[in-house]
Image (cartoon, rainbow, N blue to C red; front, side, top):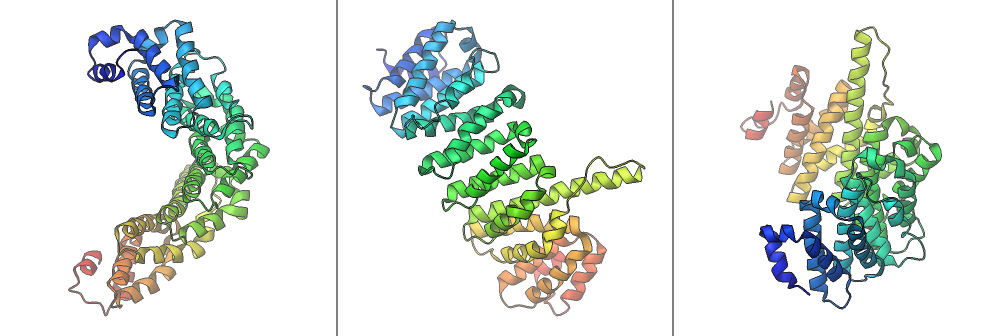
Length: 400
């Protein structure tokens, strides 16, 4: 067996001799990766270098004989099917995703997606299911929508298996919901079918209420992405679950969860601002608007704004400053969309904040003012709201 460390060093150095020996090197690396008699370190290193060769020389991989590519691919798949050590299994999943990224768009791996998804079944060990789901997520992240769109049903079946309620392996659920996030770009056909749409939404909404922070945060990211991609189809789910889930997220004590709850409503506001602008432009031109808005942000801001304002107050450490900044950006979007109706919420918050001794409330009032001011009308409102303030306060003077 070749000295793998020496080979690795030469590959990293891009020595020409290694490029000429691409075939021998890539076969040897895949064999080392598969061989359970090697140390975990050696197998992981082989996987890392195999990934590097695949990513750096995709043309050379395509030019290999079919039998050679199949042998390397099967070595990696065998590792995925049988490996229990996390670092080896994980690098194997990355390698198979790199192979798929080259072969599937070039029709070099017939039924490649099906071959992977078929491993996500009750007969497969949990470690293999986890890494296959990781690979599916990586493949979805790396390929164009047109390449995988026709495979959406088989991919959805595999991901749904990992996200199902009776799944008790947390690592599988984490891998599945991450794969779902990457897969959403390919789900247009599925979302156009009510049964598929409802199935996806149910899986994601349940995951967004998980006790596990990783699952919850990733599922909330899925909801943000779904709102961006499929806003027009979300009305039933906004009424049923999405409002309560995202409001609860903003009220969570976990920063990552709070940020995704805020991001959801920022996305809603952005979508509805864009749609409203389209509607107004169409009407100005005497045309029938091609888009519509469901006014989610306008209908729910009574409940959303007070939470956003309270999040502005939480600026006493780095994590909470990130939360405050995110809340401020959301407030700006809501103010842009809602307009003067927001004043009745902002006015008392600013008044109390600027007259308070607590610097956090003063700063929050300043942020609320900054993010909501859109013209002279609101500037005059601010001047009336804080007549008793200390005009020597640098922050306050900057705001007005």
